[in-house]
Image (cartoon, one colour):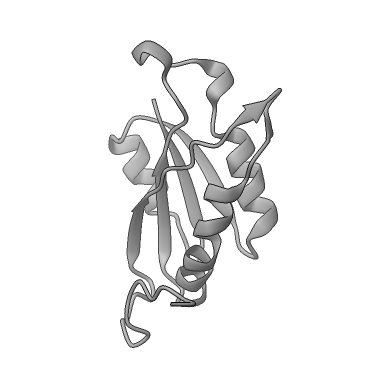
Amino acid sequence: MDKINFFPNSLDIQNKKVILRLDLNVPLRDKIIQDDTRIALCLPFIKKLVGKKAKIIIISHLGRPNGVKVPELSLMPIYKYLKKSLQTNVFFFKGNLDEKAQDKFSYLNEGEIILIEII
């Protein structure tokens, strides 16, 4: 098998919100990605969604040692990687999934991405 097909090509997702819960927990050192394998493996699928003009909402987080949120484990390096790797607007939102987050989603245009860091 040389390629995974996640959805049929005929699926109409133009202008529809697609929520992806991705494991982007990659090793960082001094806020620099040491191994981008997990992110790189997601890029073809994300690019396919962008090409189909979906509104893409990515939800993720990095590790939480002992259940504690550590500021050094921000998704900001992953956001920068996605922004550099994708030919579309990528936005970053850090917060809870509440009305404020829903308001951000309403401004997404076709083929744009918002990366949400769950706190």
